[in-house]
Image (cartoon, rainbow, N blue to C red):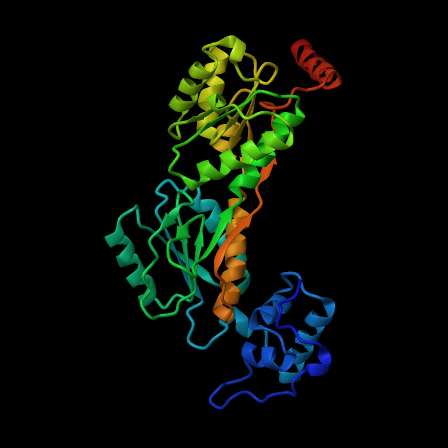
Length: 374
């Protein structure tokens, strides 16, 4: 889909000479000649985004006509830029920030833009100092991220007009631009998968109610149940802490009366899921034969270490970082964005939620017997 300000070829402006004082044609000149937005020019030059062939060709024709050199973008899209951006986080463990950082760097590396990362550790004064340091380095843009995607006070940048994107984080200020994973959609993926496996009594063990992600994931869970004609049972939806201990405690509650016990668990994060799986194992309940389990976050340190390996919803944080980089580049070019944009999650299915069919089980048994005889 092209930008709304893309215009047909017949309305194209005549070639416009660069304004006085410029060393050469700029991306703004290209946009003016091609009758498109600056963001569209950037997409055409980087062969990114979704543009019509005609629009891309028109931009490249304007580039050639003006003698604009795309390699100027590798230095910066405006004179005096530093070819650096800042990233501020309060995620001390880096569980969520590091994948975002990797995706951001992979995207910005195409423009030879470096990233300065700062850890504010929930300390407003420390954050303020980091902001001042980044501004003194004349960064071209700023990414603000966190360990939870909840609303936070707006970063104070004074009158600098510096482009800012909140990634896996939200600002309480109107007009802020936020990139988040689709928590509700991820929950629907998990719940629909469990339903597809024949599960009818699906419990949801999750974190504290105050987190937006908890509310959105529960919404996705209840919607999926309703679409499948399964009545929502409030006794199967438990909120607690983001911990393995809570996962174990929740299982003790849910299985106190075996006749009312669930046949599947959708857990709000992988730590809860691992605790729940351990508690089921201690009770002699088989996973996934008796109870299927799906977690959330796809933290491979946990998902691959559980036995059986844990199915989990992946928030695609690396892609979230790449998307932040793409948007930030066009914002540096002059584009503006606002509001909240949510990117799709994916479900990674492992053995904790899917019972192998008879043929697969026989094959696995034959392989195991072969190993035993070796």
